[in-house]
Length: 286
Length: 350
Image 1 (cartoon, each protein chain N blue to C red):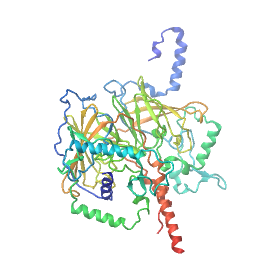
Image 2 (image 1 turned 45 degrees about the vertical axis):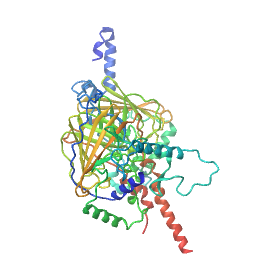
Image 3 (image 1 turned 120 degrees about the vertical axis):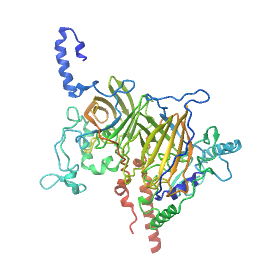
Image 4 (image 1 turned 180 degrees about the vertical axis):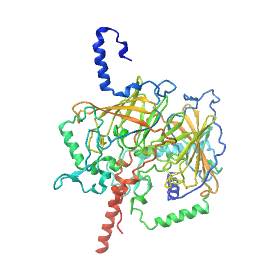
């Protein structure tokens, strides 16, 4: 649509080029954008509802083939699952995934890459989500749990089933975050039909997936929520963190709307479920 | 009031169960006040309940004996200035030459002494008594008329006794499960997220409300608990699914949002599997909501009970209450008890 405004024949080449670029950068998602999507009273895309990512990004956001476990140790012939996770068998094996990172690879600085490898070697001990800690941003989006967006004319709030994580996305910028937090401070605005959220003020403790990918407290995430149909959101997030990455990088994945009757997010207060993990060693022994 | 309040909650919190409720016809809130103020409305033409609100108050849940429903000017003055002077006294600079504080700290204020104690720095129960319909109130409870939680039924007494008997086989620091739910970071102390949503007499009595045509979301700052209230009708949860904040369904009666909740979690305050909570939310002023609640549970209480709680514009942001992520206390409490046991065992050997 934008390209059709370019009238001059001398721009034909540019049109073709831009067209190819658009196709390359924004896969088929953009086709349906702004057509047939529900809208609020003020004409904004209506993102209200329960959404969830499909796929295997929560295991590893980079492209990966299947592997036997998240945490491996050397074996006599090939690496084998670590003792801490071996009893999970096939349930603990990592399914393959095409990844959600644009370009495939996260541009880590060398030290940060070393940290990722160390994280991976001690996954079950170090992954904060194992302890039911808040998942952070953007990980909350593609956890294998749904989340509920509440959008009114005055507010935009996301509550996630996993650990009951919440984000109040402010529509007016309150300025510098007053305190670091697991889910960060989020400020949203509309760019056309895309809801853009700037999130910062993180503790730096949250990971990005189960494979040890990580960022620091300097992380800034720019998320873009674009409805491409009544049932799909194209979710894009650009991560900037000069102490961890050599350049900003972007993830991109579709979110799917729950359309079943009576759909609701459940209550998954996993704090209770990890008490044995965290406190079992301090129980009184009769 | 705070300590008695918690004492009560602790007793009831040991695993009571309860049954159905009937909302009284609470006063319909005016959408237009005498002064001509008109409640702001949402895009779907409902009163706008959205914003950040606080139900902190110096008015206790239950009325003290000897007080009428409405406080006298002198009583209001005593309560509010009494609290103010406590704050001033406890906020005074410490004497740098003082001796070590007594075990448990200086002026400890305890939920569960001696392990769950705070000092004045952490306490923010509010600075004013609750004012409803222009009346300074002596208690949040208004039904029954004596402002007190009604007597427990025999069935409830039996449940409490059985629960107490079961728990008596454990020392209070033996296992994480015997510690209070707030210490375990499962939910707030008190009943912040509720329902009923009550001030905890402690701190962080803050809420964010977001309202759409088919949902109302209420996030309690405490333990970032988000209640999702579904507006209209739909499939209820089966009886054996009892999430922490229950199953809440709302409808509008004129300009009042009425919410009915069942299926509350067994470890929630006040609950039984039969309990029903009915809440009424009204926008009564630019800077205030009126929150009303009724608890109906004939298996637990001799009669339904409920009350009125003003919610004032907080005028501030809420922050992430990441309780569990920083819960060093629970490890230390249990670890300390195990250490004490080894010390005691050594002493007995000597």
